[in-house]
Length: 292
Image (cartoon, rainbow, N blue to C red):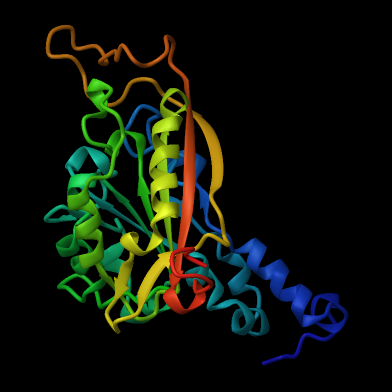
């Protein structure tokens, strides 16, 4: 393998900066030629279409390949959907109520072992211990996944009876069910994203306040017995986006998209996402009930 020191990339630029350049060049991006339709349950920032990483850089020379070969997979986020067929892109593979990567059959065992981030988008009824167990356990499609970060997103249309404008809530049953979910020993961070529309943001704020007041009641578990608790130090992050007011279903009477009285008029409304982070219990000690 040639050292390529005649190139400023290797002969002048420090390795730390060069690695940063490579990392930025090998990020996932939405392929503009294959974007999902706007009015689906699964089209949202981060899931606008099938992801792509441009890997031509790896083919330039052996030196570049050796320094970059692990980056594409470490930058890949494995999206997994829990719930009904309409909540996942059509090219995803269905196993019960779990929909896995559309390119799963092309993945080799070493690819799965390199994945560091799993993103679960779940309807509340499907966010249970059995489905979480399936996501991270080896099955007939793939080996077990051992990520360091797991993101769980409850989209606006994943809440109970959102169609009837029912107030967002997390019940005692769901709290108990969450405690039964066991994540791989490799997980060091769990991010919970709670999404709603702007007119219902106070309902999500109330849930966030309930979690931060009683963090020990909202523990996730790992298979090695370590508990994961909400981190007050990391705080609550918020971001917003503009999305559709109607979705993929149509009225049986008119065959038009269903209009919801509690949605604003027009084809666009504001969405708000509140994100909390769970970390191992040892990192949250600082008081009997503070969560830090």
